[in-house]
Amino acid sequence: MTFNMGSFRKGQSPWNKGIKGTHFSPETEFKKGQKSINHLPVGSITIRKYYKRNLSPKRWIKIAEPNKWIMYTVYLWQKNIGNIPADKILHHINRDSLDDRIENLCLVTRAEHINIHRADLEKNRVCRRKYNIPIEHLRAVVNGRMTHSGLAAIIGCSVGNIYHHIRMLRKKWKQGIVI
Ligand SMILES: [Zn+2]
Image (tube, rainbow, N blue to C red; front, side, top):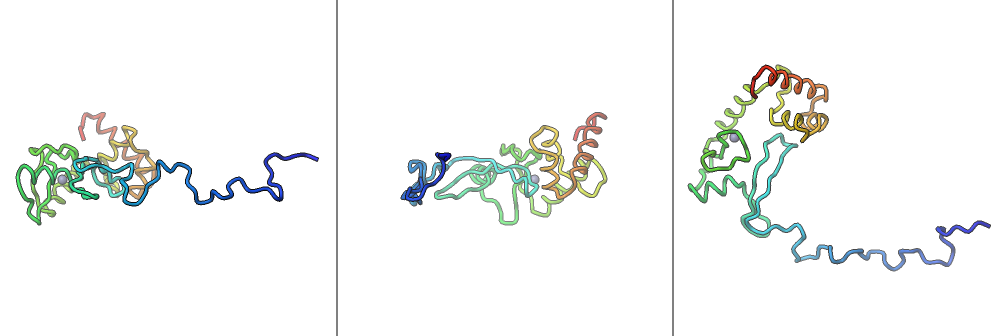
């Protein structure tokens, strides 16, 4: 008869008997009313990436407990300049969405803002295909921060389309066109 050390024999208790529902590392557990390990204090700044929504990354700051965050640009503007009218939003003048210096910010209406970025998109268009893929996203693929298939999934186009756009972009760079 072979004796199987790992088998479960009648009359024997399963290894986890009596500890079902027990947790293995109580010191790392989150208890109600207790601050989690990820808790960030007021004044903390993080960068949100928005790849799925096709937006540029932006800095946010925590301004109150338990979890109130606002865009860092808004925080800086209110602190240094004043209130932001309800029909206006802040725009990064040099198009770098992480350059939050006050001199790089200006107030525009939503309609103006859409027009500014639409004009940019046309100017930076690498080819005439149906999908106009944002240049920052193409750069992210070139720099290895995003995969071809990852970007294709975000845009909702084929991977081949991404390869095509990258080729067109490299061609422009080779011609000395900076976009
Ligand atoms: Zn803008």
